[in-house]
Length: 413
Image (cartoon, rainbow, N blue to C red; front, side, top):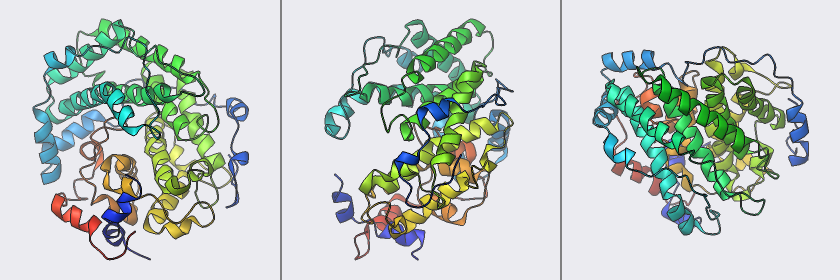
């Protein structure tokens, strides 16, 4: 079986050009997935918000570690972030208080990227402010983030998004804006002083936004696949901050749903439907499920060890890294000829930093060495800064070395 460096070497330019709860048997299909009605009938009453001040990581503990670490990678990330963005410039950005309409990604990727730029700018802005606060401890960045979000709250921004069954892209795209804001805000919310009025407005705006957005069930499969996990991510975090048990339980329901639908091997059937992108979407689902579990764990619930008919999230993790290592292990679930362009983009592996902060996994540890430092503008932010063990890795793999690792070799992966 090839090692992770071998995997990366096999990702050639030619390969990139090809793409400019009940356990189920391996052959299980979407018909076996938990239905919306079954999901809504779950008794999750035991799950309540216990610590509304808890972010998705312990901010004070991490800042204390960063103050004493001598790890060159962490020190460099922190140094780059200490001089953060100008608050005046960010506050000049107009809130999206108009009707948001976005073209679909796959048919029109260029048009989608143009239309999505203001959304990306918002996500990068809130995430960078949160990262700058963690790196520097300067209240300027925490206060700026609260002020920035309060401006959007007062404008009732993001509330008007176009959605029809045939045109769901604005609904999809605003998902990440909501959880980007929620995760970033959770980092600074309890770090500001004399901003009670502003935080109350932001809390209420986020709660209303999450309720309005999540009440749309979506058509199959977005009702129940990775898009559901994305909605569950903002619901879990906003539920914590606003002490809204219903939203928090919406987040928890994604964990139950994923474990219920999973095959014995850890495959997620609704993600396997993506054919040549099955490997990508198995990983993509974990990008949201692992942060949800981290948020719920921080409320005192041992969901990482939860099993549904013997299946746990660890099975999904093992399946993901095994098929990345050898796509033949997909078996009959999807073609072995898989899209692999995502392997060159560190944002898709933010979940690995969170998982590795709790569990040892040699394959993940080896793989992520070639991705660090990992940044995802919406699903976790500067996760290497927030989660990496200082003893895990001293320095980054040089970009030219990384390029060599992913392009050399005679065999097109």
